[in-house]
Structures are given as C-alpha cells and as structure tokens.
Image (cartoon, rainbow, N blue to C red; front, top):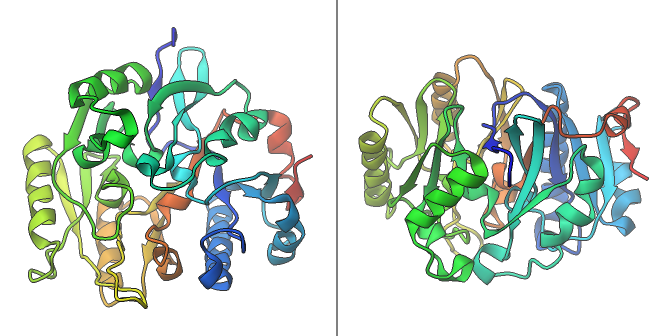
Length: 351
C-alpha cells in the first residue's frame, strides 16, 4: 500500500448500505419470515435516510425477494453465493486516500475458524468489486469489520479477546496489530480494550457490541448498570472504567442491558450498542424489552443531531447477532456512476 489509507468513521456521508438476504439455505430458517421482515424494515428505514441498498441475493431466491420488496425501494439486487449474512465482518471497508476513496478487504475466516466462510471470503473480489470505481485492495490479515471502531481523528478501538484468538492470526502480539492498523487504516492511536464480553457472542467480543464513538468525543457503551446482579455486571463495569481511563476527555453514555434467552435457555448477546449510523439517522436495535425505552433515550442524548429509528431486532438476536452485524456502509464516492444510476427507478437486478 503506497498511498496513505484512512478508514472513514461510520457517520461519513453514505451512498449505499450492503445487506445480504436471509433465505432458507441460511441459519435463519427457523425464524425466516420474521427475519426477512426485519430486513424489509431496515431497507425502508435506510431509504428514508436517503441511503440506497445493495442487496446480495442467491440467484434462485431473487424472484422471491423481488416479491417481498416494494417496487419503489431503492435497492440493487446482486446475485451472489454466501455462507451467511453477517456482511459487517467480510464486506469491504472504505478508506480515504490522497487520490480518492478506496475499498479494502481483510481475510475473513469465520471468526477464528468457528464456521465455514469459504464463500463469504470471496464476496468482495468475485461480486462487489464489479460495483466499485477502484479495485478492492486485499490485506493479508484476518480481521472482521465488527472488530473495528474509528472516529474522525484516527482513534481506533478493538478488543484484546478478539484479536488474540490464535485461530485468527496465530500469536500475533497486540503491538503488531497496532502497527498494522496504523499502516492499513491510518489509525493514529489504537486502543485495544481488555474488558467486556457478552455471553453467547461467537465473535470473541467484537467492539461493535460494546463501545461506539459519537462525532463529538462521546462513547456509547453497552453497560449493565441497570442490573447489578447480572453475570455481565462486573465485566461491563470494568469496561466503562477502562474507557474512562483511556479516553478521559470523552463523555460516557451507558446503555442498559436486556436479559434475553432463547427457547433452549441460552443467554443471547442482545446489545443496544449494535446500532447502525447512516446519513444523520441511527437505526437502533430494540428487543421488545423493558429496557428499550431507556436505551432509545440514551441514544438520543448521545447523538442529539441524529434521528433515532428503532428497529425490532429480537428475531436477529436469535442467531447471536444484531443490526450492525448484518450491514456494511458504502460512503459516497465508492460505487461506479452507472451502478448508482441503477437505483433511479426503484428495485433493480444488477446484470
């Protein structure tokens, strides 16, 4: 990488959002009708935020998907084969350079070889590259998008538990990660947090379930202040304290923690911090829990200049993830003009 790459914060103006359609061939099958409706709700909310949607769909599911979408929706359907729908972790990232915006990708190996990711790891080069103005730069390092959070000043957050899983990059030391993040993402200060993890989280503690930046030196943190007897209380309290010590000028906004279990009695990693920022709107996950109201109030306080849009994500968390995990933003300047033109007349299938 000869050019200087600077990963863009999520609140950068966006031209589109990437989603991957859940179908009967994915792990969503037991909740498919409800999950597809969540996706349709997200698409409608994004369109209202003036955000187009690039929707990856298996070829044999396109007809069914077209039947579910409003014809006026600004959606570009792109045929693709994939293992799963968590595109936050394998979709390309967008960086600013002196010569314009450039898409980049890391290696994705199923969150430390927990799941097959063979098809997901090929999505960028085989499918998404044809939509982009510039080639997608590949970086030989296993990193998921959900493991990275950055602000406009180049301060980057990640978690030690995730990065030090040896099935990602062996015994790679933290300082080496920090050097790589500086080189590939323009991180001026990489903070690798040691505390915080949600039960049931297959990602080893992705930062997007725990701590998020605001544009004005704020930190939104998934806390457990509302439930001192919860098993997460101590670890998340330690996370809040760690953030206060490492980022002392930042204002802290603590989110309440819901307690949700599935039909098998397993605790689900429901996080209000797994929200999605798009064009002055924030799509905020809610879970039909008593804590939803307070979580939305905290979010409005943390992002006073943004429109907060609640999205019922109780169906999503049944597969141990939420709203941010299923999406990846595309800032303005990445897509080809002819691709953007496809959105002009409602739903379009990319040929």
